[in-house]
Amino acid sequence: MRRFGRTLVTAALAVTLVGGTAGWASGDSQAAVTGPPPGTAAWRADTASGRSLPDPATTAPREVAAFFAGLDDTARRRLLRSHPLVVGNLEGAPLPLRYEANRIAVAATGEARYASLAAPDRQILAFDPRGRGQVVEVFGDLEHAEHVSVIVPGSDNDAAGYDARRKPATGPAGMARSLREATGTGSGSGSGSGSGGSTAVVAWIGYTTPVGVGLDAADGRLARAGAARLARFTAGLDAVGAPDPVLFCHSYGSVVCGLAARHTDAADIVAFGSPGMRADTVAALRTGARVWAARGPSDWIADVPNVEFAGIGHGVDPTSAAFGARRVPAADVEGHTGYFVPGTQSLAAFATIAKGEVR
Image (cartoon, rainbow, N blue to C red; front, side):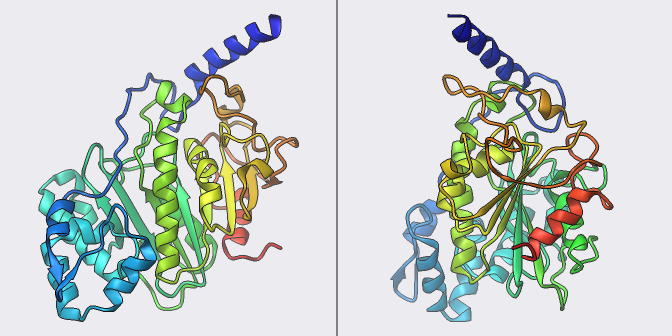
């Protein structure tokens, strides 16, 4: 009975403490944005060269890639102009077509909060204005990269605040720029494709994240919806010929990665600042990827109880010996968001993993 009581108390603490990057504020319940993008009905009613268009909800990314490979440039560009929100979010569609489609889709919103995403040097791989908005940006030349990394962030990230000013090397875009620069294949100052970069980094806010600290951050509902979207995104990378990615999963994003692990072809999965991955051990993730974990000495996530009870809490600490992940050095990391700060042990190790130099 005492043990059961302790478990209940710990679960209650998990509700209060588990969260993302914004601090100790109460969170608002979020409705997960799922399903195909806006404009799908009109897309399904259209044709190209007498052929039905691939259903964004059910067609596998490899089939989407094959469909576009069978179209000439005129047909592709007609679809781009007629259905930018669908083309821009369609996994398996050609990358340059998606970048252009999303510039059109962002501009079409007419909203100042998104305007910077439409700049000609941005490579926006996905944009969905529903809810708080979702955005995926590529840093580097994804079409020709030898290595690909994907930043999967935690709470309080969305399209509306994506370009808000942050401390350097924090936030999805800041982490992506810092990692690419650390690999020696980018200046870290923009998304441009460049000519010699062998590592591309993707900032992926492709799911509805929790807001603040509340029940959304303590349970797995949003993470489960995000895991399905992350799995489809990685299938889309595979469909366009990208190498198996490294997933860098921060805070609540590591919960998403834990649930998606068995459904992706990731080469490595790196959890940092993690409240748990909804698995007791690396083996329970059922992935062929190498799994890594990092936690800095002043990261407040250490105060989150590592339990899972009645769906609340995210389970075993990924940095614990019992979990079995490879440890990433992080002794000089400050706070919850300092893992990509230049000069840190963690960033140096992350760059080595991103370049595939660890065996």
